[in-house]
Length: 446
Length: 168
Image 1 (cartoon, rainbow over the protein chains, first blue to last red):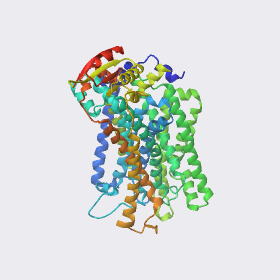
Image 2 (cartoon, each protein chain N blue to C red):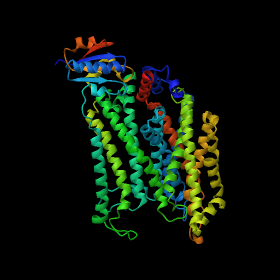
Image 3 (cartoon, helix red, strand yellow):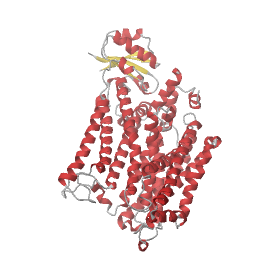
Image 4 (cartoon, rainbow over the protein chains, first blue to last red):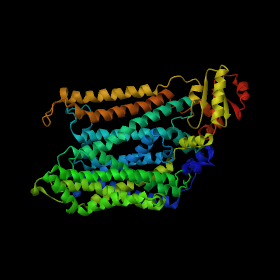
């Protein structure tokens, strides 16, 4: 019997339902949650303030210029959309592979996906010189009789990102509906009964409804699976179909997808470890879960490392002087320290996961996950900025130096993410109750 | 009919499946089963024959795929042809990303909306909600509702935890 099963023994349908539902309905607010909420709310206020200033003054408040026209905004976009990959991977691909251990982590990982992808979607709009015209990317009947340019990767991007957001939202919400019905039936105050009742859509657990629900859920998982792989592939095409050395590379789609899963699983650990600790969910999110996530992290880390290696190898193998110059600049140029930090955080450090005690040490994993976040963010900055600052003509070389507005918007986006996640923990069950009940049932009949 | 039906409460999913099967064998045609999580074979036991969700999703996928490709072809070849990098107006490989995304998008919307439509949801009020004990259907109890006036005696013979009238 596995560790996950043994920790579920002693739980029944009622106790599992009450435990998870009461985190939302009854449990008093912990002071650490309150402190986190206040701090992140302040960060969100700073973000909105900086956005207003950005809209008034324009993108010149950032460090971007020619040749580095894409700065933190695009790096943050790529980073956040990457973090948004693990949720759908866990929910969809692990569902199709019948990995039972996903049950207790899929709900919050999907929420993480939604928030990260939503924040990611904000950045290209902030980055537009005239953000009020962002809807020109969408095909709609207009008096100018214009159509989007289908041969532009940026148009593919808006289709990929908005499809991903909508499908992730549908997938998440579909899974939440039965749990909202549980909250509706268990809530004691009239306001909560009405609020949860409205969002539960009148779910009553009819057997025929469950049958259609299951089919729809499974098909959504099947649809989301190629979607996960496609989103970051399309994002990588923004770079790969241009001719800039450092962007123009066929390894980019798989390399970006692996990096996305890598940072996403790191974020799952960053969120799961404090959550299981503060809400006493150790029986549901066991050390075994963390260990499995660590193994996925290690595997993705190696694909990312392969991407780094191939980029360098192909640059020299091609014999193209501009590609070779770019790689030399990446190693020893002004942004060199960023590259070596990336290798340290993403390639060297995760190797401790070969060692079993490290995989099972909660705080080692938490610390490592923060290093991986840093490494992946620096990698995105390195790709976006370092590739562009020295291209074909030495006369057009330049530097990108982030301004305080770059940092405020980056910090603000992180605050917004945690603000949304903290709110989620108090309003929606963080673990799927109906799936846990089914797990308890399988446990009893096994 | 003065009432919606008769509701019986059971403690385990196995008892509920058995009860549903017996109710059908006893000749009751309109039966509904309620459970806090999906149970294998329960829908069939209540007489559900065809699940239309999958065909609806397939149709949605076709609409998204053909519609998405047609939109790009129409705009790039008929409505607004422009020469971009010397590529032909109908440069099909480059239309694939948007076609793929729209296929997934419309199929996913069809799955969600189709599931709700076939289930008759959202429906915020339903007669079974009028039974107080039914709150447990989303927690730990399993209910069988037989849509007949005379089902009390039959349902009691299945030894449920209790039976209740469901007012219409």
